[in-house]
Length: 95
Image 1 (cartoon, helix red, strand yellow):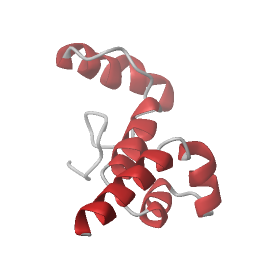
Image 2 (cartoon, rainbow, N blue to C red):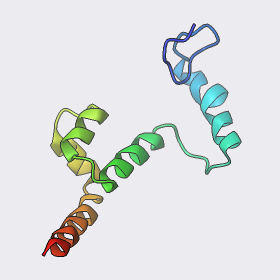
Image 3 (cartoon, rainbow, N blue to C red):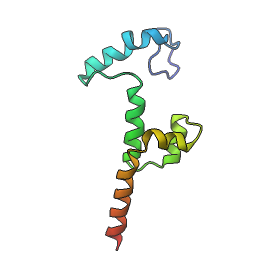
């Protein structure tokens, strides 16, 4: 039964945490021939890509489930200076 889960068991229930990497995630990583990463690294990649593609910081923070934008900024603040530079470049092109 499909319940919209990313890594379900064969009967559609959530995969046990200890089995997720071994049975589901690592085989997908190998099949995709991408660098071996931790499951949690996808979260950081998502947030960084969203911010680099000019997603609103508040929106990204909510999508990550952070209780405040400050947490998002503390973790992903290294991405923001590049965003500021791009914003200034866009402003410069307007004038």
